[in-house]
Image (cartoon, rainbow, N blue to C red; front, side, top):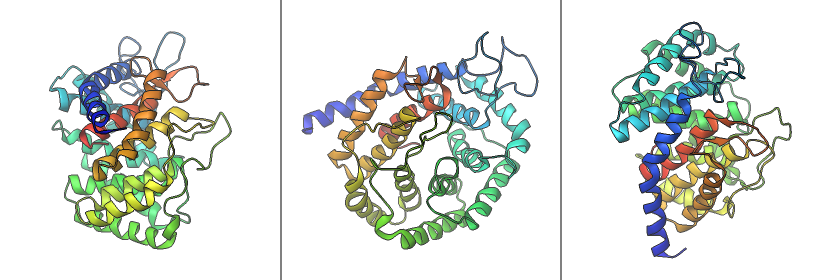
Length: 335
């Protein structure tokens, strides 16, 4: 890819971002449990993994709702268009009323829900609203307790410590929580010391889930890159630049990576990390692989909605969020 191709590629993503955000946001409204499907009740305002319809029963999903709020908020911020604001309000009402059911250790995967509370709070700040302080502090408490007692840095998916660190650091910088920023830096420096040259490993050879009933939506290497970025981007940029160029660059694939399950979502998440790597380094190799992945996802999408993988029958809210986040990461540096 020569310089003229770089310019055209970047221009393409800049020019198509608002369209991507709009259609992704529109699809997410079709996944939300509101009128005409429901007018009140426990799940009112929640966002299901897929589009609601007469043949599908109502289905609530706490973190899918948070991911939809994130997407609607970024669209609202970029476009200055309030068309999805009522969807945000209804979704926030659901989160406020139901957080006590999800932000508890008895909830399998509470770590992912809690991390998304912080992630979504950062997006909400762009449009001048927020989740309650009590919910945010509960999420922070759960995450710190989990990380303080973690027995392996190799945990994946809902339990990945590096995605949690990325979300904690993002929140800490957005809301000037210096105690949390210090906490994330100490955790990450310790992880770097423990893992050494194994901090990044071959992305193409990352472990793969084989059961169709399981989830495999996170690239572990992508999360480790995103954690480095959020923690060090304002404090130790030279170390960040060196880590990306020397270590992360060695492990990136040639393009889209075939996976057994959640292939589209996994690759979209990897694209988010590649976008950030490119923004930090301007290294063309990151953009080349990013573009290969995003082109494949676009061809598999339906007005920017995507499935988790090509064997799954439905386009899904959470996979669509992963895809649009990869786009905002390149153009805006927002994820």
